[in-house]
Length: 125
Image (cartoon, rainbow, N blue to C red; front, side, top):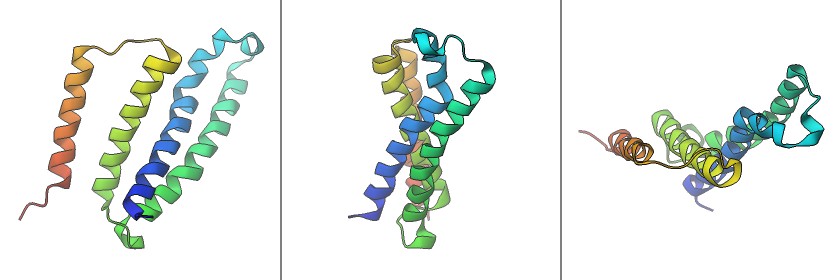
């Protein structure tokens, strides 16, 4: 398998767990089992989810980085991660959490992210 595609695929999986760890606990109030949980319990659950984030994120960066014969520099890996993060966050917020709707200004911001990707990946001489 292509190292670049493997790296991006692992970053996608990592960001699903990241979004659940960072923002999923805000949805817990919808579930009866969570109503009696205190902050410390919520933190432990989020840490457990973040563990799985790192299981995918660390190999994604190692496989994708040029120091391990991958195709990406550190700047490129970070830009990919940010774009993937926003994409996954948007999908989960709109279709799974169902707390927000996608508006024109979100799309405009994402357009600027596409420009950022262009500038980071462009090989300037």
